[in-house]
Image (tube, rainbow, N blue to C red; front, side, top):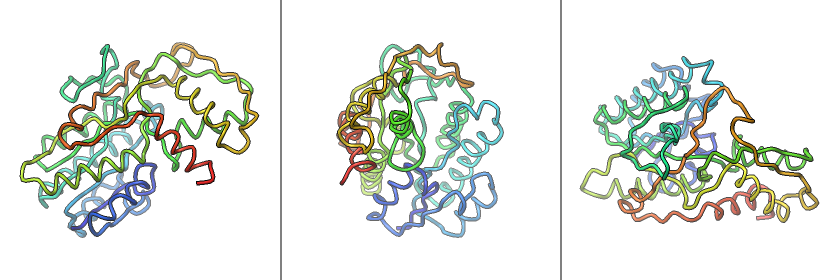
Length: 296
């Protein structure tokens, strides 16, 4: 079994290097080794290696920058994904791909299910949505995992930014009217391997779109508040932290890209199909703090 991992040095890719090792021969490619902006190079890489599984953990994720850099976002999130899907189909290989809650407009009152109509409200979400469509229309065997508010010990993310700002600022204002679930890169990698292993073993084709996120919900403010309270007991330099956190509305923090107000993802399908249990979101936040900043 040969596995090609793209985006190996990102926050999800780094965790996947750990969980995919037990499934087969793993070829891990960083952005420098597999530039998704070079479509012919990507095509040649896949054709030369002839993988049984392609895991795409690479993406253009600069949500605000995408508003003024549409061509690059589309090249990486749409066109390159189309190349992967085409090559996976030709090789009869599995394609594992990660998408986002941003394929939805956030206007639904409860959690989104996989069959809800997509309606992205920013360029990033639009390019990810089109990438999904290219995979499903290609006919390749695939698992598309939509996730939300990803954080981890590697790379840049909201959680790490907050921990730094808690030690630098006296006052912080954080958006409180966008609701979602912080999702650990560690959880994403663990669930990916569990689902992939079952997909390889079962006679029935389990291809499809699956929502992957922990249980519970919070706002960005709630996430920050939890990080602050827990961080005081774990992070060096935060024991005497007295930062003042203030909740604000999205309108008070304008950004180039509009964000969905509701990013909640219903995970019943992935749980019922693969028998995976989704823990409460706080559990992996605690693990993140201990792994990234504690003595573990």
